[in-house]
Image 1: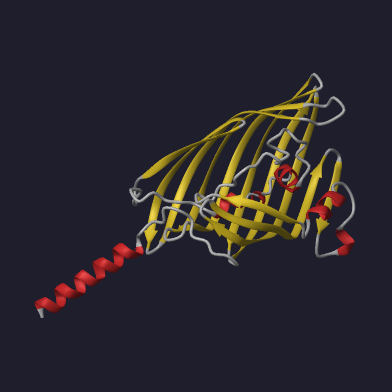
Image 2: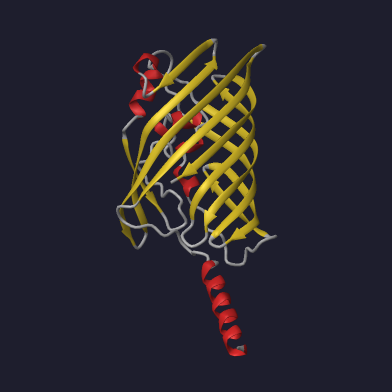
Length: 280
């Protein structure tokens, strides 16, 4: 009996250890598909001189990602926006857009949104789940940001960021402690502090706080170059499968504080945006 009990305890302990083995790189396979369902809200207040311009957006989208290749550097994936709904109120105009309702596909930004639908974007991901930029990336070269990524950011669509689908939790991060991660892109620095709230089997619940600060320069054409100074704070919650680094749910609330300089004019803005994403 004692030997039996000892064996059961040993087996249980072994299973527990296996269940909590953290992936050191994201685990994906060719042909694998990930569905991103995002709901987003944004309330932004911007000033131009003495004029105040408020912008409110409520949107939802569905994006599908498919892994088409895996190699020793990472993964090649295609991303496609399948559905989107937008309710926008700003610049003195209102717009309601629904990709599944032809009677709600008119007005400001409608043509740009239509152009994003079912468009295949090919992306490269490293084993941390981060996008690998190449020299042809228009935004990296200071492009206008009019592509799908720029439009999704303008509408504060968290579902437009494929990187939200992945998170690697370090092996030393147990319940009740966490880790810090620094990143930089162009002249923008980001620091994120993660904290493991709970671990149940392979699923970890992780909270985070993030600070993003720096300056982004963009070419607007016709002499309309733009410089955006930002100082944003955000917090959120993530549930992730420790065994493969795939995120199940992602929620983030961002308090933004920025200043846009264009053609000698300064436009400060503040706001709050919320992204709520489910991955399937």
